[in-house]
Amino acid sequence: MESRLRLLELKCRRPVEHLLVGEYRSVFRGQGVEFEDVRPYQPGDDVRMMDWKVTARTGTAHIKRHIEEREQFIYLLVDVSASMLEGEGGRKRATMAELGSLITMSAIGNGDRVGLVLFTDRIELMIPPSKGRQHGLRIMEALVGFQPEGRETAFNEVLTRFGHMARKRSVAFVISDFLAGDYLDDLSALALRHDLNAVNLLETGGLESEEDGLVRLVDSESGETRYVDLRKRKLADERHHEALQEQMMERGVSLMELGVGEDCVSALAGFFRARQRRLADETGG
Image 1 (cartoon, rainbow, N blue to C red):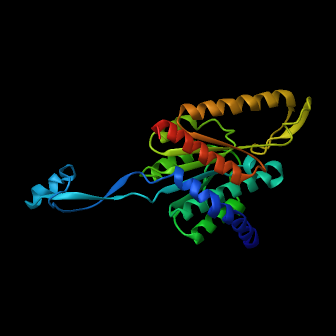
Image 2 (image 1 turned 60 degrees about the horizontal axis):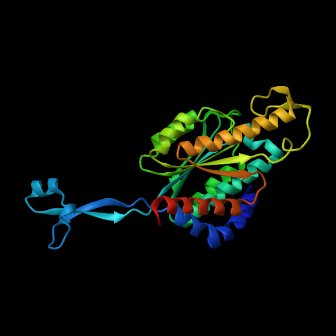
Image 3 (image 1 turned 90 degrees about the vertical axis):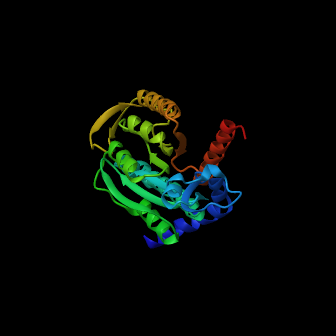
């Protein structure tokens, strides 16, 4: 495990330092200012910053002092159900782990606090937000090697728990194949208070072939065996894909789509740039 973790860190370090941390910083900036303390009023101070309660209590004019709020809280909410960990011979998990590691190292490189929640149909592991390389390695180790107890996917508990954990506005990346359907209401509510980003991990093999006919498949989460018409399954996958794009757009959730085995660095940099362009269009900047 230690050697795998070291190789993953080395693989991610250069693109993070030379590309992604800059792209990340341009997109996820601090949210304005936050209150620090009060001090006595001085001639020339903005009277709009007057703290009238302290002024009344002390009999001396005081104003509020604020500092720019730079530090952010970043959460990775990662689906570790069987369809995520066992799909495509382990390549799906490897892609998920690399993407999560790139986000983690970019956030830590920017001085932000990063937390991790692994979930199936329950909360499997929680790592509270913190800073520093060792904390980042702890998150990366969990992404690479943690073995969950559950096999199925349910979003309601993890999204509810995140809503309770994140008291201030935070940035969250929900990484999943979104094959469950219990997340829309909770996602909509959270998107009003937080910066939500969904990463849809797309399978790239097998069912994307041009072959038709019936095949026998085993559902990785339920363990059930059934016969599937490949052509109908492909159409169903396309409809699911289109519906997910529409659902996320309607709810103000930024959607990133990543194929298993795809270049995570290019995909993440492209996602950051697309968000930046959209933000510039919205603000007219």
